[in-house]
Image 1 (tube, each protein chain N blue to C red):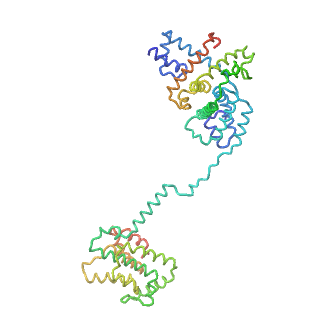
Image 2: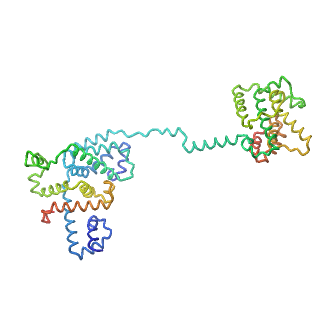
Image 3: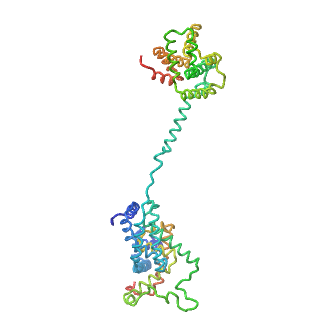
Length: 278
Length: 195
């Protein structure tokens, strides 16, 4: 350390903030000029300590204390946010809603390109059949009681169908309206095409149980073609039909088959859970 | 209560404990008043500023977030009020009371009653203290505030830098210049015992 560096740190040494105390002290010990500068600075600081210290008026302090005492502590407002979901929760709900929405879109509409042309009609039929079935349940099937059960339906099934139709008549109007609205929403999702003519006939007439017809149709196809195998959607639809008819054994069989396919696994398992134990 | 740190006392006051505020006032009343007195160079104005400072503390205590020390926050308020006061004085075109008046050879400060040293003070070395006080008040604003923060409150240079908003090295330079000014102003007090 030289004299210039020492002078730079003299003040810090006096103020006890010197970086190199020992270095400054060493210079001060051997350099009279540096020592003189140090002494002068110290003398000024010593003099500055004699700066008169005055006190504020006590009355002024009393006034201030009165003002301080009069201050009302700021009340922390009840957090309204507690009544509202946190932003992360809102985001999670939104994501969930989108997820549920995507999941509920009919597979044909969502994965139109994935469906093989040969299966397309079957898949469409299954969706339309499902819609018609719900429509029929919603009220149109009321005419079933008037028109009588479908030909070829066995006696217990017919009796059950009649009882079921009667029960549906008692369904509250809002619920039925809701269902109709849901069906009308589903129409464009089925590809914007008109339903298959056979299904339209069924819907118009609603003279027979769609479920029964669906089951009959499957049996007819199986008889006509030994290699016929229902599509996963058909398996699911048939399973649900049996479920509607309370034929638990058949329903379980078809639903379990549907549950083996990735496409219908979730819906089938859901239906299986709702199935009454045998 | 008195052994609590400033920040805890302020927090207690925010919750409604007036005694905590009183403790803070007792702790800082002297240093703050003298800082204002030497900055404003007028006792009456210093008293007004003193009251304003504490009123600001009362008003803004909820704004204190604890990012800095309470003392730093308090002196920042005091300094800002001093700066405002000095601006107003400049705007109003007030002449210094120490400046000679056109109609009189003597400055106003010498013609009006003031807290000038009394005979007893002169006899007991009060003159020296008044000389020192006058020398401090004559320092340029930037040097004076650094000097006062160091002398009255014992702030480290780093803390002073926080109050005045300048780099630490600038603060050190201002302190050095302030001491040189004082050395020059008090050079006639040669006798060591007078210092």
